[in-house]
Amino acid sequence: MGKKRLIGLMFLLLVLSACGRQHGTGGQQQGTGKSAAHQWTAPLTGIRTTNRPAKRAVAVMINNHPLARPQSGLSSADVVYEALAEGEITRFVAIFESHMPAKFGPVRSARPYFIKLAKGYDALYIAHGYSPGAKNLLDSGYVDELNGMQYDGTLFKRSAARKAPHNSYITYQNILKGARKKGYVMNQPPSPLSFASAKEVKNISGISAGKVSIRYSSRDNLNAVYRYNAEKGKYARYAGGAETVDANNGQPVLIDNLFIVAAKHKLIDSHGRKDIDLTSGGKAYLIQKGKLREVEWENDSGRILPYQNGEPVKLVPGKTWVNIVPTLSSVTVTD
Image (cartoon, rainbow, N blue to C red; front, side):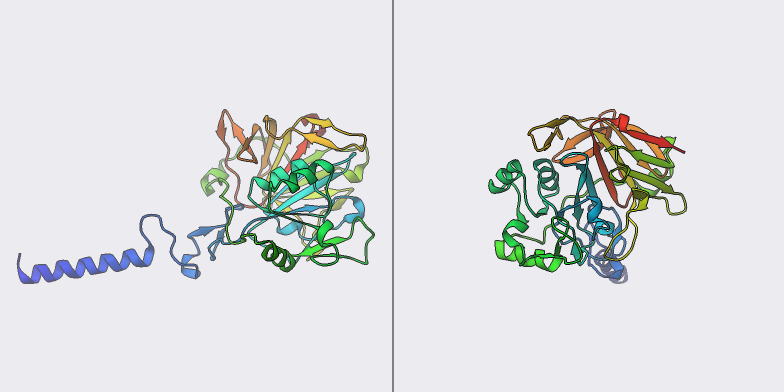
């Protein structure tokens, strides 16, 4: 090989090597600055981010009694499960990873099925109080957790503006403080959910779902209503005629995936406590971009996810709200 040709070949190899280092090879995600803006996505929203996800998810039990509204932190949650507690009042377990608000609450007591939902994301579980069954599960070490029964007045603070049990709050700084005290690892993000591409989102079809009403109670202020905002491509949530907003910032709760699942509910004691079957799967509605599809739900490693004909259905990038109901007959959908 001639000397000039050899030098040229060496130069070409150097250039290719430099390009590989700059852009990354083998599917590796390089760096966390602006140059990597399109290389990272938040695991529970599928939204692109300039920072490599490095936070453990936090799952907070949030009160939904009318006296607890507006709640703090809901607009920041990546995934929210809404299900009945006692009687006809629902409660939320809100799961946070992509953004941690300064304050969460009002924090309410644990139930076994909410604990199991948090476990599906390997989240640090935050609650204030517990049912007997939930206490047994927590005492067994089933999940890492912080509870206001042990930290009332220290990690958990009471608001003078509201009456107990609707006035317990915790900050993210105090969550981290409690996690350090108990030796919990907080830098491992959850495994990602599956999200649709832009092309797949454009091809979503189904029946028109401009308004979705979910009846949990004979009392209107205990029910949930979702209205589609076509301009934003998202659903806003309402209860008792008022839009659900975040007390932290006044921002509305906006939802990209509304997933309504029917699960068997069973009364287990005289206090009205329930057991909800979150393992058997069943019928469900998946509502995205103003369209409703009839699907099924399955428990996939502790997560309640949509399936169709045995295949998983991808979520729209953004926030997801899962309403667990005894029967889909409680759901009304109109244009």
